[in-house]
Length: 185
Image (tube, rainbow, N blue to C red; front, side, top):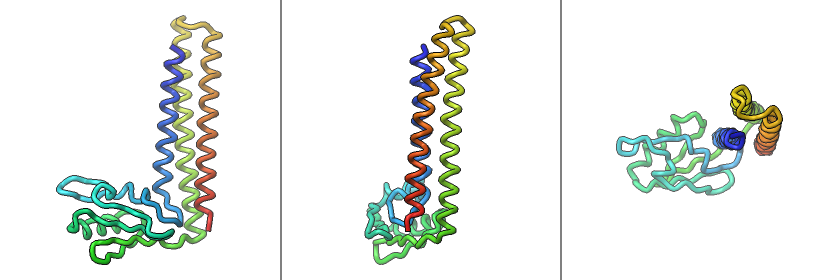
C-alpha cells in the first residue's frame, strides 16, 4: 500500500517538473527557439490549432525563426496570431515565409524574466510539497485504520521525504540553468 502511495506521489512530482519545463519554454531567452511559439494558436478551418501544426518552424540563425506555412493562405493568420500573443514579437513577411526576429533583451527585461522563472519554480516546489503532504496524509490514514505499523509509517514518510528532496533539487537545477540562460548576453 505504501508503495502505491509513493508511486502516486512520484507521478504528481514528475508532472510538476514537466509543468515547470513548459512554463520555462514560454519564457524566451535572447536566442531563437521554436518552442517559443508553443502557446500561439491560430484559427485553422474553425479549430484553434498550434502554429507548429500548420507550419514548419525552423531556426534561421541565432536570433531569427523562419515560419513556413503549409497552406499559403495561413500567412496573414499566423502573422496576426503572433502579434496578438503576449510574446512581444513582430513578424516580417516575405512572400510565403514569415521571419520572426528576436529583439535584444535589456538587462531590466532579463531580470524580470528571471523573476518570472523564480515564481514558476516556486509554484513547482509548492506542487511537489502538496504531493508530499497528500502522500503523508494517506499514510497516516492507513496507520489510523491499523493497516500498517508505526515503523511502516515512519519508513514510508522517510521515503516520501527523500522523493520530495530529490524533486526539489531537480527544480533548483532547472531554475539555475534557466537563470544562467537568461542572464547570458
